Picture 1 (tube, rainbow, N blue to C red):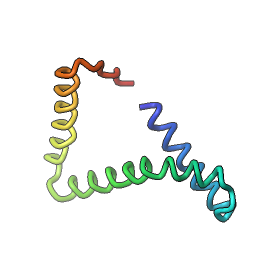
Picture 2 (picture 1 turned 90 degrees about the horizontal axis):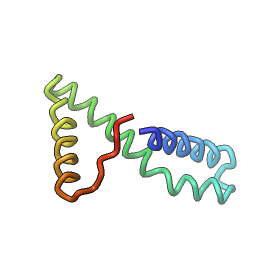
Picture 3 (picture 1 turned 30 degrees about the vertical axis):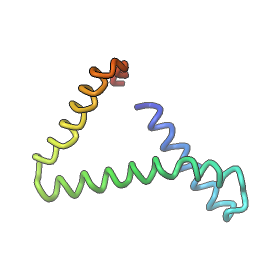
Picture 4 (picture 1 turned 45 degrees about the vertical axis):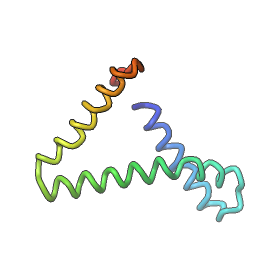
Length: 86
């Protein structure tokens, strides 16, 4: 979880650098190009979660719970280690 948080911060900083340089800083554009998918996924997930909660209430919590169980089952089947929760 910490790596994701740091990546979100790095993406936000890259976006700020691109805006401040008005797109002239190549390194900032490169960092933004690598980090925008993570930011977009984070925002989309938050919006979808909020919409789900607004539409179906607390039953929307079933979706992430089932996805977590599916990931654990797939990891157990493939023998990949599951990272500990932080």
